[in-house]
Amino acid sequence: MDANLSASDIAVYGMYPNDATARKVRKQLLRKKVVNVRILYGGLDEWVRRGYAVEPLSPEFNLFAASMARS
Image (cartoon, rainbow, N blue to C red; front, side, top):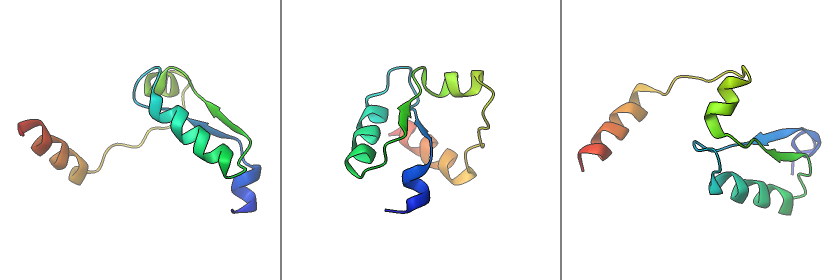
């Protein structure tokens, strides 16, 4: 495990306010001895509300999402 990662403060969140994926990722990181991991409850909406940066999705992802919606 990278020492810088182990010493970093990490926030995990999901797309939805109480995302099970965020809890799962936190648990996996804790097992790998990354101890400064917190869940940001409120999901992506809370991340944006707090003023943190969000990058736009790539065009490839948007094409993939559109093809999945048609399936």
